[in-house]
Length: 125
Image (cartoon, rainbow, N blue to C red; front, side, top):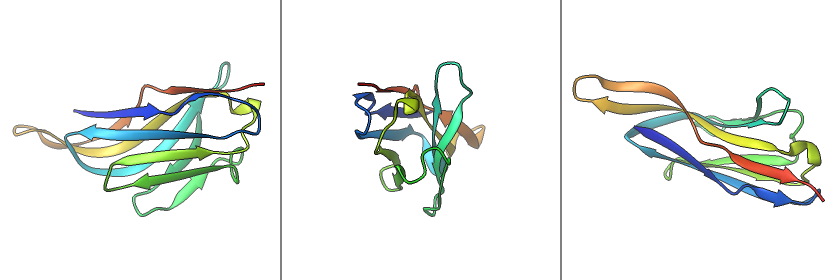
């Protein structure tokens, strides 16, 4: 149906930068909000940043001023540029999107919240 695939995670030293990318594919008709979440060990999943179709962005207070979310509607991608990384940014990062897709001739179009498989970001010296 619809898939999200993340890339770009890895190990980085405190103060460093990483760029995460997420690409949507499948029987897409349209994509609504695209977001990045993260899940650290022992913590609840946290919304990091979100970007609406028109480009409006929102950030959690913990990353504001350090992370930037951007999307390319023509390519169905969303990126997360992470600067000035801190050890507390260590987590599995997930891409999420609300999409309209074509399911079948019988069932027509449907709306779905789709998640990627996650990519690990480790900030450590």
